[in-house]
Amino acid sequence: MSAGGGKKAILAALSANAGIAVAKFVGAAITGSASMLAEAVHSVADTSNQGLLLFGQRRAEQEADELHPFGYGRNRYFYSFIVALVLFTLGSVYAIYEGIHKIQHPEELSSPIVAIVILLIAIGLETFSFVTAMRESRPLKGGASWWRFIRNSRSPELPVVLLEDTGALVGLLLAFLGVGLTMLTDNAVWDGIGTLCIGALLGVIAIILIIEMQSLLIGEGATPEEDRAIRESLVDGERIDRVIHLKTQYLGPEEILVAAKVAITPGLDIATIAAAIDAAEARVRRAVPAARIIYVEPDLYRTQPVS
Image 1 (cartoon, one colour):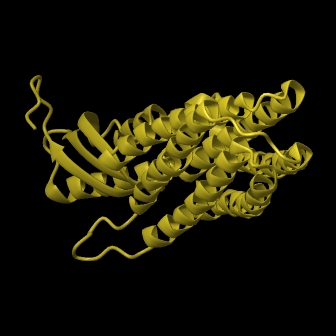
Image 2: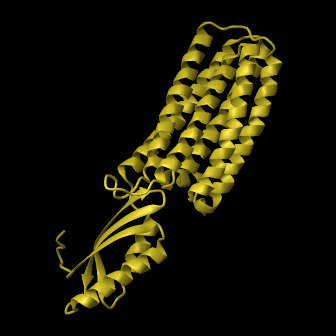
């Protein structure tokens, strides 16, 4: 995923969530709805998250230097991890606390129809953001399922926005049900239950994001498809016989470090070996453009390879 592609989805989500947050706070002030207030805090967290994602993209564009010779690409993973923490603390924990409080001390809603109207508008805006994220993600997803795309993507922004928007839409429906059932039954406990459900939902999404971003921060290797393409490209069948071992790691969403030991045909001179390695690196870069940093060590194949 290019930074520009992800940026379009982030900006759409940022615009939608900023407007929704203001509307929800107004609605919460008018109605006294805990579900509406929890959703307002959720939207503030989402708006902050999109700002963090944009900031992470900007920081990742810094040139490599002596302190960080492999560049700053992992800033995008770091700030996506912070997004997950913000979603959990500001969104989930607050909503759970507010839900429990409202269940224990239910308060009658005033002008609940205002909350219903605002929630319907918010659903429309969130749907726009969600559709934009899906459209940006579809070329990268290919034939994989959406869940597999979220689990396997090495680019953090689109999975984050997709999960946030999914949580926002489901959360809005829960808030709608909470307010609606409160109106129908004249029992404000339903508003608290809706708020508690929103908190649980945000907690699940935050935990998924934390696990995924933590894995990317530690360092994930190339996907199985990329690994296979790299191995096939290294071997030419003439000067390079086989790959003895291969290690890869994503330094950022669009940059893979490749370290390989390859078996060279016996008897070749140094110039021929150097040319073979240069050609192998060129083939790898053509097959997997993200493989930008490549180290290839020539060796003779042994039954028990020595690292």
